[in-house]
Image (cartoon, rainbow, N blue to C red; front, side, top):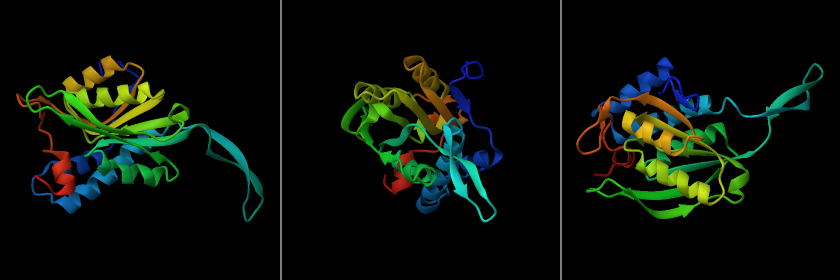
Length: 213
């Protein structure tokens, strides 16, 4: 499925794989974990931004005036899924400093594992923006599907989802629910366990980013 679906990209850069291994270690502390998540967001974001449109403008170099490429087209929006998605915002903003930032708050029912919305605030003119939804982990896919649903209900159309690790079950479910969605994954992990945690995973990304339990 993943090799056949052109909208799904499993990133394979060695530096990215190395940093994800560092995240997995239970010995990695909060400060280092947070910094690595931001670095990984930049690496995955770099891949996800390959199709940004370019236009040419006149630039006066020390030698001559030249027509040079700059980013054109739609304005960008970064939408983290709270709260772990906040850890990826800094890295994405380093790539797109002018991007607007929205927020979608979801929590997972510990019994049914179903997501429930508690907050949704998106940038204005969301229908005219290139939207990047970020969340470090794609487990069951429920939260990501709900977040994309909310954005589409508000008029969003051009949407890309970025995550650090994903379970095959969640990736398949998300791609099936939103076949038009572009998905960039840092690493495809083995499976979900009986508690719907990604294996081998990296623990609770939100707790590890913010130092909570």
